[in-house]
Length: 70
Image 1 (cartoon, rainbow, N blue to C red):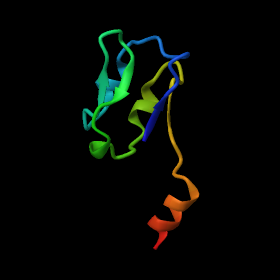
Image 2: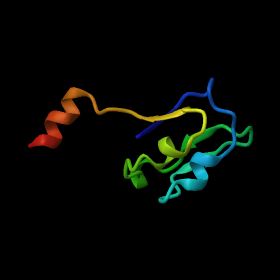
Image 3: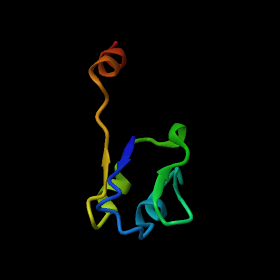
Image 4: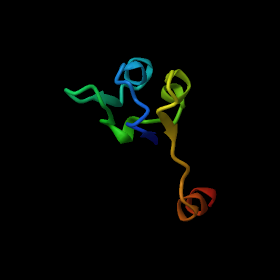
């Protein structure tokens, strides 16, 4: 799931605009947030399109990775 580094974010909305599942919302102050985590497919489009590297995909913790490997 995407993680937003707000200190790098210039609040342009590009991450939300390019999200194919429209799961990134924008607060009234322009900051992005994950509005619909269930819809996120981890496609990385938000990460690729952000001009300020303010979005990255969080890696699953080891326990979660072990569960998915089964």
